[in-house]
Length: 455
Image 1: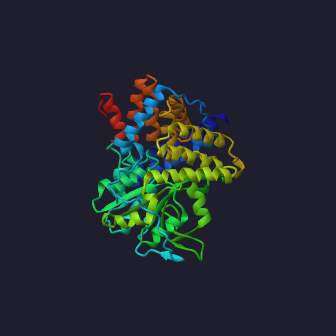
Image 2 (image 1 turned 180 degrees about the vertical axis):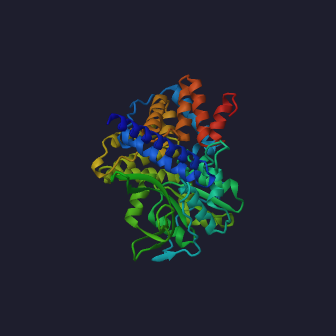
Image 3 (image 1 turned 90 degrees about the vertical axis):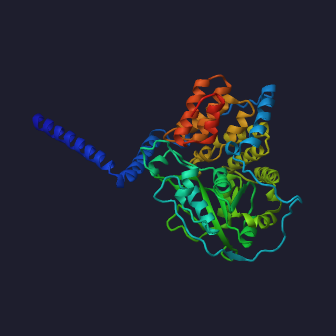
């Protein structure tokens, strides 16, 4: 009997080995290699998350905010960087607008406006393509002839390994920042322009749409994960109309199937939008900029918009309860960062992370992807000379909230913090690792060049 068991065991091992060999052979067939790679990554992620649930990871700030000469110097350096390198700071570079201070238009808008001529673009068949798909819809609306891949080749080129195909190269890069989308329009096209601002509201979106300008917003999105729990993800949403009678915006959702011309109720839209500090992006023909300035009014002024977003966050801290307090504190910190008020920002983020630790998990998982999409805490802690907090937050983000440490922003900021505490070798390693996620990424290239090194 044991002999037969051993024979069966050997046959099982041989059969399993044969399956693996066939699978490997199939995986190298170009037509299906990309699909195998993405499915493998999904399975691998689920296994990692099973043993290391990302929602349980909690960052604990040091709760110190040293007001030293070093802090002041770091803040001055930050302001210089904000001026010189918009690619690093996520701040769009705007050409001069009108000299007169714009005001908010008070013209009433219709009860319903649905913009015609919208071409729907989904994000399927690619990896983390929400940003490229939405920007493509926004530019196609104005007549641009490019595709989502044209956008992605610039904003998320992925790995520099040319042996991989285009889809495989893009696997490591999990997110495209708003400033990257705006920079694409302003640097890769001639006839179009784009801006982003914080602190938008429903009435402003309606006014923009009524004036003929569709809007991309960045918002939180809730869905059940594979375990059945409610999960939070970041998501761009192209907004192309509204209907007060139906009580919502008309949106093009690149993720959902079907995702064209969906109704997003105003309250749900605003609730998700809150988690990104009410950020919105407007792409428009350059020759219509005066119209955009008129509709935006005071929102055209970046500083005013950031201050307005700060006031909204402070107001919501007095009215919101439960898990939403995390987002309100986080927004307060983000607004302070946009105003170059890094010490105040770091204290606000401290409060946000305390709320995060006390998150009511009966209502859903903690939003563990938050630092995948928003990097304000790194700015705040770094320019408050809280370098160890930068390192600890990056470690939590890279090793406890994601299946592979492939977030170029977290790697960059950890590298900067390592350099400031004297660990240059670790800094260089992080800069180079960031370039394996996002080939030729300017901030990492610049960081290496400042050390006299080539990427």
